[in-house]
Image 1 (cartoon, rainbow, N blue to C red):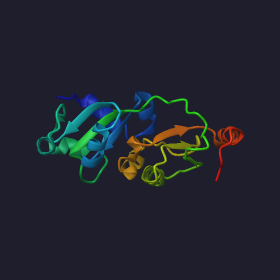
Image 2 (image 1 turned 60 degrees about the vertical axis):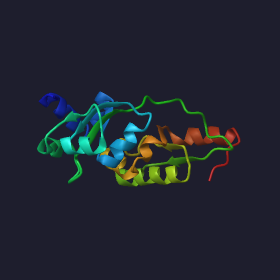
Image 3 (image 1 turned 135 degrees about the vertical axis):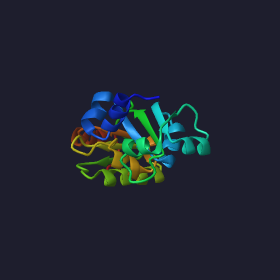
Length: 176
């Protein structure tokens, strides 16, 4: 059983400063948690209602009563599965090549819009999205929710765009 402090820490991940401090983010709802469990992302803790755990056959979940689950997540409904996932370590990504597509985003401030753009990139088979440092946090709960699981399939990288685009052009990549 989780302690109140563990639940408080999980709830704190709704705020960016705590996501950075703990290196974790929240994943809420059946669809997204199942996407997380099927991905390469590390799941640190999984919370579930007894009903959701039984229906989905989820093992290793900490079972909480419905009222605790409702307080844990930020969704109005559907907080029957909530996971705490580790934010992956930033990777050194090579500049885009001539044969690969990369979506570069500058100054995206709405988390729902960023999540939608990640979903679009995933749909079109674009494996990497590079966001400028002034873009919203890709692990914001609204962004994770709007991505509908694409956050687990598309690599999101933060980098100053002007130097990265200049390097890419110098290496022969076509910019649109």
